[in-house]
Length: 546
Image (cartoon, rainbow, N blue to C red; front, side):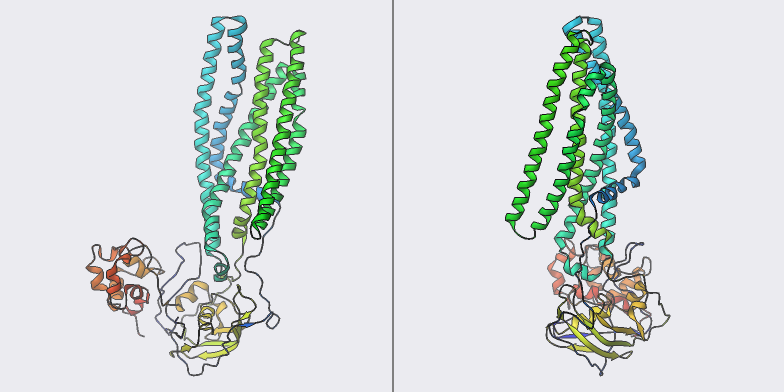
């Protein structure tokens, strides 16, 4: 469409699809299609210039991007739900992890025996025996630790792929108004970086949770066997640390929400939110460090008393201390799971808003697919405003009719509503009130893919995609619907056949980006190759009777 005029065309029969974005068999999407043929003298339209209004006949538009807020645990449940899709790989990884953790839990015991053989017994046989067992354990730990990491890394990649598919499927199913309001950079950020961060966080935290959970159980069993009194003294610090971890996680979640909101207001407010989050982290780490140091002093004091009183050997005391250090490390890693999940939840909010967002225009409610379409178009008291500018009246009480075979030119200044009429006729948007009819049926009653095969748009500034000339000409057509002969006929009608066959790879020559679309020769072609390829050349095949 030109800023001063518009031309529609409509084919009464033998129509062919032109552009369709439905390359995925399980996805439907709106797209630009072939020319709309029509022309009428009885164009009676109130095409309004920009006028402010708050409501139209009781209709009021709301924001296109409605916030979707769910609880933190709902987010975590949704995140972990992706793990069910790769349960088989998780099961294999879990088996490797069990072997890894089982071997790792024996390491402190044999470490204590090696030290005892050097310091106390000075028994060479016991020393080498302990070293041998410890070496075998470390070999098992290394082997199955690597297998565990490799399996879970593959799982991370699969989860990332699933998330991106869900997000991409949701994005391309949205109505045009969604893209009018959403920023391209934000959508790409969610699709590329946020999905990767989320999948890595899920896989990593599942790994940490299972690995350290098993090692905690094994360590406690060994510690109970050495001294149940010292074990009780060790675990007494767990409840307060767990409480402060939960408190910090809740604060972090609130702080992230505050930071997300203030990013859209002032940088100073955002800085305050970051400072509060840093203070909370410092407080959490201080409490955690203080508790660990206190329990270490208590174990040394009481354990020393047990050794001196003969109720515990020095070797057992040494092994217990090593298990206690390992237990503290495991609990620290388990505590980090909560913090990491809160970070992941914060990053996932916008992603899930996109994934769960329902398109405002339902593409599956139309079922009408008549064998023959005449091409009568009617606008009946149509009113419209763009979702990004709900208070600006673009069209108001617009009425006109176009009979089959007529060609109509819309003439008017920029902003008068010419492009809006075409967008409404393509069903890219829905009017606030009134109806748009095709052969006396509302356009929303037509089956979506069928409708866009019979009604389509040719842009004044078409795009060459980064694929071959043949694929550009066939872009949007059903697979195997047309042969190379059909493509060549279309190219001849567009006067580009000779240019294409004289290129190095003929119809397989790449266009766009680094292909032949970047060469200056294209600009020397009559009317330019860009228009030629995209102006519905396939209408000129043997079935064409325009």
